[in-house]
Image (tube, rainbow, N blue to C red):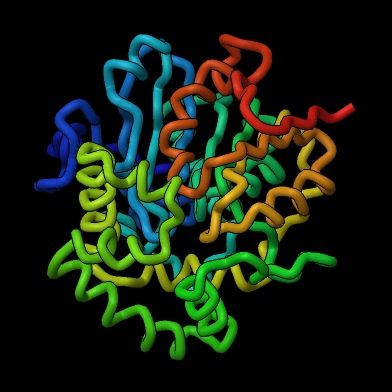
Length: 329
């Protein structure tokens, strides 16, 4: 069973963390096997709101980038985020697969008294959101994936086509094993811990014009810096384990998903190329796919707030009219 919060501990901000928003309630929750702690945050309309799990990207953490607290409250959204094992305040889960996220999300939902919920995953959170939809069909009401990845063994997909050089190198190293990938990522993670702005600057040369326009916003840059700093503040383990999980069997078949599913992708994405969402759309029977022209990877940050009414059931269809949308059936 999920552990109860210690009686002598505050439910709010259980550790001193300069990157946590004041609007958030932060918890630690035991994993289903009782062996690990998971760092969890809630924001928005925590009492009486519609629960939505937001699964962060790679590298990433529970602290962002996120819609503003006031917007979440007005939309009636109870947003739940957590650090995947090895990131931020969550203990590492050695040898984790993408499918292992389902047990963690279920343990968090049980601890918070949440019966059913929607799930949205952005970038590296996309495969994990699909795992929840496939493995928790009685609890997940809807799922959205923004600029996600397909399985590395996807039949008929050139997995690296259109992908930026840094990601090709990272995932190629991941396929060679943890030791090789750790030697590649550990120095980069240390540099980011020393100067979190570095990753934003490093990415800049590989950004498309559309992404540069998004990242030029000072508010978004600040959220990205905070996110990367929290993600890697203890170790690079979460980043390394994510990459290896993406390049290994996921532990479930996306074709088994039966809950309403939205796949959104910017047409010019070079970090998670558009072919990945197209492949998934052909195999998930309940999938809607929205491809937005003139958008790329980081545009997903702007799209998320527009999706929240659909995820909570406040609207029947997602308000994505730009680009091409295919609805199943």
